[in-house]
Image (tube, rainbow, N blue to C red; front, side, top):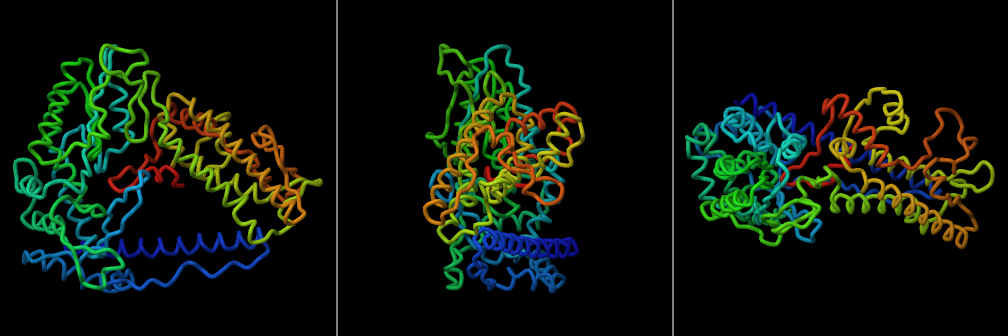
Length: 515
């Protein structure tokens, strides 16, 4: 065990180093781009040397002293006196305006939690419900979505969705302690129980208050940010899984996100009762504002409350198949708008390098081309236009399927993607016109203002302006084109080498844009 903790400390320290180096590299790239665009030197770096609030958060210290730290931690566990070093609490903004508290634990404590989780999870994997898909090494979001999609409802589909209010923050500690102690439900060693309980009642403080030593202690819920929460989240809903297995036609649970399907209203009522009974026994609360309850999923009005669809784990389930919910579309629009503003508008107030664009032959606009490449990285998961086209038309194997490209695989209805393609073209076209107005009035320079067609085909860029090969890919990337490639890959190879979105309890849709 001590050696496993030591190896995990070194792994986490290395990952922290790599993350910091990646951050520095990205900033330097952006600084270089600024200079290219404006001809001006970049301002001072935003990266300031970090002083760890404790040496146990310092990857250099932890890497050098991994053996000593592992020995110390394990000795405390053996003597039942282990206590995590107080965590740092970060408040992460959510799309609805609220904030989520995420805990950052010291590297030795995070290492211990990871090792204990792997061992406890492996021992208890078969005890958990097969309908529980979160935090399993061999399951992911795709498995959960496919399990729902394959339900044979015999013509009429009832969906029951109940949302728990601040699930991870509100799980009663007494209920969790009882679950941990119940050897009939979970197999844990006495040391593992001790570790789980200590993390359940850990101390913490916000970053700017950490140095005062005025720490708070957790008395309910699980620590978001620690891997121990992954098993605790499943244990807290284990009894609900058992009840739904007996009551539902098909149900899927991804941590606290649960949806149950059936083909009979009386059965739907029984399922709803299972949720409320579980809340009454466990002490969890139902978020009535976010709980759709019972509904028939149909395109035609029915004798009971009817909805045209329901949303689950980033997908929209409708009678016509899987499609994209508004939440994902809005997130896409926000990202495209932000990138467009950064590349075409934002920097103009600081200056402009007149060699960056030309409306005379050969016509070019290197800032617009940079935007197109950045959009392609986001929408295609890092794949090039040539790779996507080669797979669609020639069947040439794609090297990877990540981010949005992975998300596309399961979509049946591309209608929202078609609308997004048109919206992206319009947004970029309007931005080029606004940019031209600013450049013309402020710098006496004109930039290309391509039509939607020119943006879609890439004909706005004169290849003669580019020196060398390969020629740049000047087409605006297409969500529909990405979907065609992803669907072909799905029907040809299944989900082989497709990276599922990482929906965790403190992650969100930003994971879709990883590449």
